[in-house]
Length: 313
Ligand code: HMG
Ligand code: MG
Image (cartoon, rainbow, N blue to C red; front, side, top):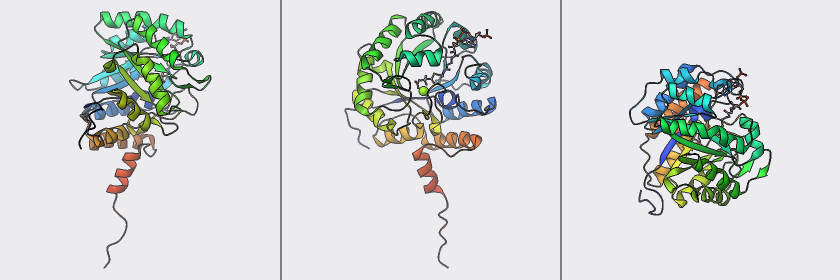
């Protein structure tokens, strides 16, 4: 496929399925399933996996086994294993676990910040500052996630200026990368581009990413819109798993399989083997006892299923 030269030649996918995908599951997912999923994603060529969160188990019980997950995963050289760290306590866990990258997660909405991490935006930055410093001192990369970058379940529309404001605060404390997150999947391309441009006024093109939940089915359109801006890193979740416990009704991230299909169709390299990725999605969906949320996986499964139509005798 001849690539449209205006789009990036290569995209880096961060699979957030083991973290964002599983954090909302009511039934405890066994540690060995999480480990198998992370390993299957790395084996499929995913360059970066958000493996777990070092957060309070009272707030997010599903992530209570963060240290065990990190200890058991067989690391594949060259793959980044990232974890969420809301504060220094979380960072200490991440450091002990040998995380390659930590993610501090703030919001462009005050109301969401309070619901998700129990503090204001300004207080969140105060908590993130020592995390960013400790991480940089330890040679660990720090990403920042900016939730509710286009819409908030409590506040409604979010002004791009709020994204720019949080991005600046994050940059000033040493955060190296801004993830623009549509937590509840309400964004459409123009709104998402505006939010992304606000982050791009603060961070360079190769240090921003898109994180789009697919609640309204807009995520792929939003990925494409950001490709047009030159953005070349996207979070996605295998099998479209997930949702945020503090964003009612929000569904999972855009399915990694669907993003990879889109990118490969556009002639954009990802390094990911779609067949192996699909197998990872099948494995975790099988464990959860649910059909995949990936349209591409469903289509390929239907294509590959025995037709059921008998051959004429
Ligand atoms: P808090 O209650 O305000 O914190 O929670 P605290 O400092 O007062 O501590 C309360 C208790 O939590 C204490 O334990 C601490 O030790 C413990 P106790 O004395 O009561 O037994 N604690 C911790 N335990 C383990 N790890 C830690 C930790 N910190 C304190 N790191 C806190 C504040 C941030 C900890 C809490 O609100 C929390 O854990 N929230 C989790 C939020 C979360 O994980 N949300 C989902 C991920 S974000 C997301 O999905 C959005 C994203 O995908 C982008 C998008 O889509 O928008 C990234
Ligand atoms: Mg998310």
